[in-house]
Length: 250
Image (cartoon, rainbow, N blue to C red; front, side, top):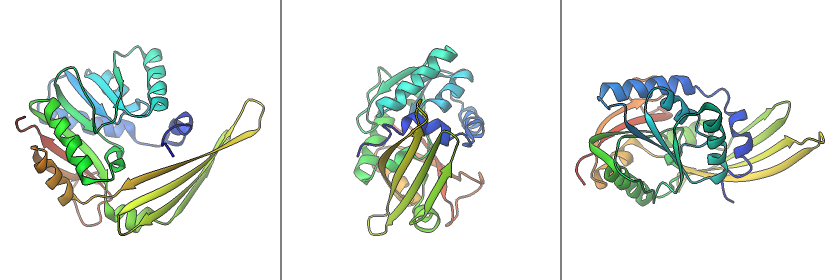
């Protein structure tokens, strides 16, 4: 089943405790540290555009790419309200095309975990390298094998809100290192009745060594890895990791 269709309408509701402001501050700090000018920046897997909007308000000329038409529709509604000058493109990250190069590419909130094959990772990284300015910076995060295997795999999460509720069932497939999660969502309609819909998502856990190898195959330079929760060195129990890579020739 295609992901982020009906779920797009309630995505922001269930993500309202996500620390987007902290993420934005961290990303702006990294972009500053690596002297990325306040020019074009690509948000790869931008979803409903919350972080894209924040970075635009920080002075970056933002482009957002996502392969969910429904998620981008919400992002464009936000753009209409805010007046931010953001270009949104409906594209698969494995095949995305830009009109020119950008100073940096970001991809956060586990977007890359939706790539289930390492060949897809390499292909995406090749495109990132191709569309980055010389020595441009790529910042991305990913959920680790440890997180899916030991923390959320084979667990059920449920949350009840006034106008919507969800049941999130996780099934971890150890051999493939893929986490399947089945979402059942109930949304209150105007007539006060609840509409039920379901979505099925698959995410693959990765190890830092796999990311380094994929970057190398794509021709990129690995620069640094950071535990996304502590902002310290990566450990065996890191659940989400930030990676910083650099363009290294086309």
